[in-house]
Length: 298
Length: 49
Image (cartoon, rainbow over all chains, first blue to last red; front, side, top):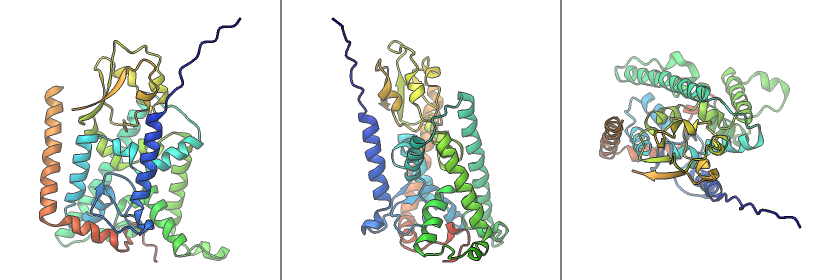
């Protein structure tokens, strides 16, 4: 007579809830397609502003465009500061439309894990890109205010310098308009007449898509300027992940499940997982067999 | 760490609240709505539509 031990069924309530939230958020953000009018909502998500169906503003692009119009982007600053204070980078994990694209491509591709040093290094890289872009934005703003515009020096990217390396607006805005306006060349010679900027942006989008297929959440980890800026404050957010040293059996299931490759067990002595790359997806909490990880507000 | 945590939270709260209040005062939310309601060529890298 054989004895079989029945393993408890793993529950994926958090993953299912997160997927439903991401899909609903995607539908709401592109609510114009369902006939809804533009709202006054400004969220720290990456979606761009040029798509006619977008009814919720992308804080980063809004900030850039307003700087370019010689306006201080107070709504964007308020949105980034308050969401980071309350939720950390949870908007990246639960609401961001490009985060959903990252997750879908990550699920289709490989699940390459990165070392803790690489994870942190990629955040610093993204932060340096964000810093450089902000410097350019503020310079453009200052020169617009004093009446000596420098936008032309940046060519086609003068209105929104991020678009130079932004796969989000290439996907949601530029490619949308190309298709919507039926601007794709009909013959081979038409392809040679397309502007060089378009080719650069398509090339960069392709690079990011390959990256997202090879490394989960590649864009969020290494390139997103908004996520990098939010990472500065997310370590101090009211919403945080806690880990109990007493309960933890150090099986590393949480670290294996983490799409952002955060070394969760290195935070066990502190009792709180506070990392600039944490997007609060709660996969660590879900997979923990010892229930040693939980969410706390305050 | 606790002092640093509280200090950063306070800074974020002050920045957020002041920005929000001034944004409401100068009616920037209406500007956002108008921006989202019209065609923007800013993100299209100069591609003409």
